[in-house]
Image 1 (tube, rainbow, N blue to C red):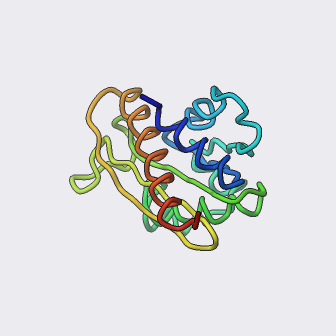
Image 2: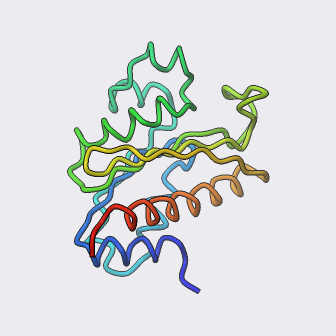
Length: 162
């Protein structure tokens, strides 16, 4: 059975699309997993690891006010990461992910540890999803990657003709 990143890679290659990531919770794991696939240079443009809030603000131009209002691990901030990534890396698909893999962040009763936010920007439209996973921080990151690869593939399949 093919891994989720292989299925996404195959779809991107078939449709001559490229992808870039803004990674917070996954800490570079998305780009690492995509980089293990042969001929990935055809589709993978790169990734910015924006784990620390200061990188979200300075490099990806997310306003401090937006972070203060919604927290760095929120759908609003994740949306902005996906959109602003397009100003730094030229690609067709921009995917951003934030979330809480361990205690000590912005967790609340309504946003517990294991909450993950995804935003995918394609053709100036944003597709969003929120998930909740259990497990160790590494297990949460692994599950988040797999879920995002599947989410991107499903979204593209419903959008791309042919």
